[in-house]
Image 1 (cartoon, rainbow, N blue to C red):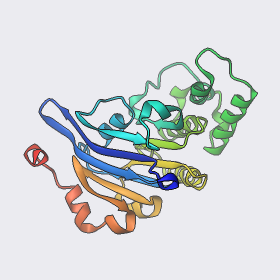
Image 2 (image 1 turned 90 degrees about the horizontal axis):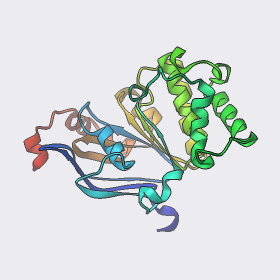
Image 3 (image 1 turned 120 degrees about the vertical axis):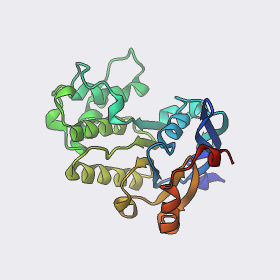
Image 4 (image 1 turned 135 degrees about the horizontal axis):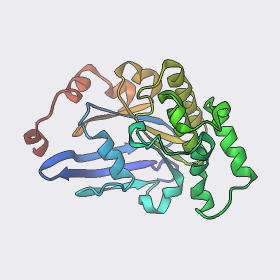
Length: 246
């Protein structure tokens, strides 16, 4: 399979909370070097799937491979941008330090950052338009600015796969544009980006491939093939737990 090996393979992932299915028998293959959207209603299981991929949750069945290996073997090659709402923005630290946290995987917790690490942090802040905010407390930032800082923290990890949970949530149009151009640059560098996304209007212009999720996979593949009216209707139709069990 060599070069054609998938960046991410999710194979028959099922996750339940009690009797409730969050994900049911999910199989998705994400190709190398593309921007892939995960699309679905609130409650369709997108964030649960991301957390299962990253080992934060343990699926009932199925497994996830990155470049053909389990997450634990390749974790340094994967960068994660969580939802903004999952972070304590009152924590007393500044923008520069938050982005430097992205270097700790390379450094190890106890080693001191070198010039190269400082340079990488500056470069990432420059790229997301936040260098002038480097010494601003994170609690003083707007939602869009916070999201850019998160993105910078992911960029300094120099990963091969970027997993982003709703990076466009609550950001202004200018920030959205700047995030998209960063994602496209990552893809042009041969990276793989998977994005939990909500806005149906921008799917065709932002993404190469898309997975439509409604507890189960409705469809997955190139945007022009699977992003059809019929598939979208099925994705945004409420699936009862009875149907999920079938």
